[in-house]
Length: 253
Image 1 (cartoon, one colour):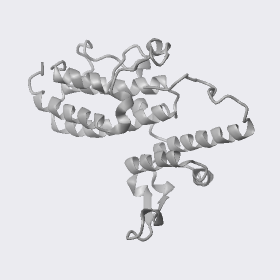
Image 2: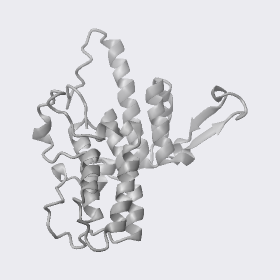
Image 3: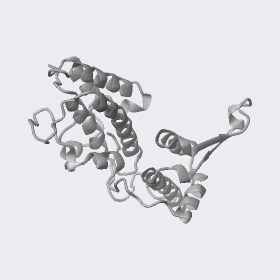
Image 4: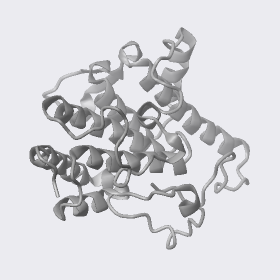
């Protein structure tokens, strides 16, 4: 049951969860991971506190949460679980990181307007507040373990980044554009005659306007994709199921 003064904040969190679930690309986070069906037998060993948005939605409908803060903690667990299990820089890792940003942006507004029931001293019962795996902080959950403060990219790094963009396929380039549009829309410059067909317009990315942490992650993504292509060209007979380092049979949240 909602605690005193938590009715409105909980309604706001319900709207946020519903809005996230309405996104088509949020499907991987909408239901519990079917780790048996997907043969991800290491999943319950790595992820000890499983969570998904569908479960959070049902808990909200049943009055399970007493504060909005508890909802936020469970929601953050969805992203940290995904980023813990999947390889850093993988599609699912990047998707979780993107949704972590979206959620924090919306939740921040709720916290500014209402008391969300957050323990100011860090104490209180942890019965309904499962700890994040590997003791992730929210900085790590949203920005990865490289932290927020990073040096600006060098001229060489920017030039390499621009050159590598031409080697990406349509889906990969779409990921770059959507990430920049979400994180730094001012970095996208569109020119051409808007009255003509869509393909007659061009979009340029102004790297100087991309935040350092966002550029670092985009650069890692582009480098990995270009590296994969080069490896396939050099070793056409090699198996495409192995990627070195932390590998998974399948990647899931």
